[in-house]
Image (cartoon, rainbow, N blue to C red; front, side, top):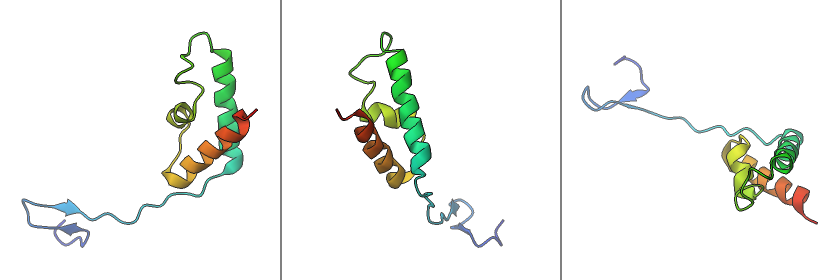
Length: 85
């Protein structure tokens, strides 16, 4: 392990060097279908859900799996598109 260049520091203070994080680009069709499914589930279970939390943008972000700021922005934008009157 000491010959591995990704490890730095002494024996008592080893740390793994991290590379740059790769955030995949948002797949808008998939995100759109996930947002629609989320809204449909919220409509189906509206008697059980608190409207303060679901359906909301933050609620959608907690339920819909996303990676990185680009996908978060896409979820927010699509949620707004789907819920505007």
